[in-house]
Length: 258
Image (tube, rainbow, N blue to C red; front, side):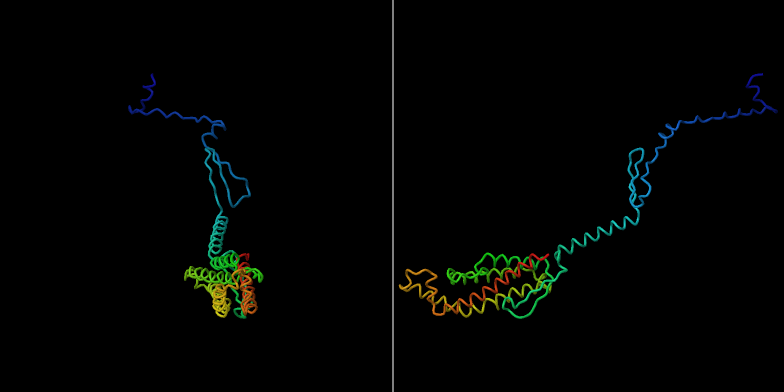
């Protein structure tokens, strides 16, 4: 009997032949590794930041929650430091003391915490005082009084413009207000009294002296020494000049304070 005939059972029903079993052929370890890419794990013990390199060269970076919070905290601190350093200056937490008695404008001590606006004002005043006759020591033998008064007048004008350029929003800050008020006091209390007493009187005498033939061959220094109150004027001039140099030095200290 044939195989087809053997499939007939009992009452003539046909039974399907059994499904043949498929026996898997074991793969070699090398082939298995190729079909299932493995991961190269980081060195054990690094719990905060890990790098994983896969067989297909993908890199996975894992950051521990604690480490992530720490990084965010450091960034926040740096941002805040940058903000306050820009707005208030790196040394904004330090105080600076000014004794107004040194400038002849009072007997009180001013304590402030200078920011960049304050330092900018102080810097510009220091530059003006350092590059003009007003902030340099008086040379009694060679300096011309008329030129000294011109320097003082120019300093008045420059300082007024400098103060006017400070935005009102900055002026509302108490320490900035102190610097500006001090600058105004130096003009009105430190310099103006001498000018009020001496300038008009001396200039009028000087203009008349220049028209006289007695001084036709005299130098400016020789002419001014002929002023009847030359010694008193010069003593007062030197005193004011000394206070202005003290003011200049204090502005320099404020600018360079670390």
